[in-house]
Length: 86
Image (cartoon, rainbow, N blue to C red; front, side, top):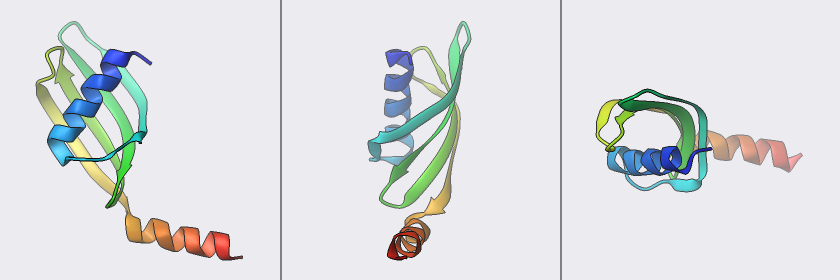
């Protein structure tokens, strides 16, 4: 993956939601245009798992953003407990 895409994604997400675990960042799709990047993926933080779709210009200015919590941490912990207790 292009390091520029990863760097822009990390800085954009930090602007939008604050701190998150960079090691959990998964960029599933990105598309480069002459003046912007469209990036889709997911990540985790202390609250749970999020999906995101962002559109950022080459200078890092946010054009569009959608960041959605898809699985709360409580649900993840309950599933892990049930799966690993048997």
